[in-house]
Image (cartoon, rainbow over the protein chains, first blue to last red):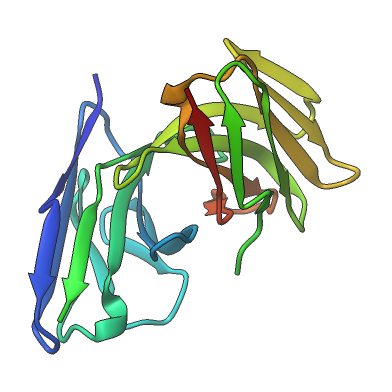
Length: 115
Length: 114
């Protein structure tokens, strides 16, 4: 069965420090991968998505970047964190067998607090 | 920008009652999905309805889609305290040439009191 791992669960980082959040998927090949951010009490904002290794699309300009070094690995990074980067970050994957996205599977999220 | 907007933002009901949440969207879609999120956790997929479908059922869940009004509703019948969570609609846009992405609304926070 397919599983998605996202870590760490919580993270407290000082302003200006770097960030690396990792997400891996097991049990499927060539998934679509997504990073979302959720501010407190708000909906999910799509940050990045990837349809294949090295293929990253950014939905909003920001202080963050994403990379997909392997088929089932998706990394969210920042060189220097800002206070506004605080939030709940969610990784997700969906099957690429159909042309349009169907069901998406989410990791448990990383609560990032920038202090 | 947000594609879907849920209504109401918050809903409080008694156990056993039905809960109805609505979602409106702006542009043509391929499909619309509903997700549930328990506090501080990831999202769980509940149900998907395609643009050529009008109604779908899954257990105590009933979803309707009206593409002419660009709206969908999620009905949870005979609610339980365990249904307490936030519910999000997500749309997949119907543009050709690329795989669509899931665009989420802001969610409805449902509280079911025992």
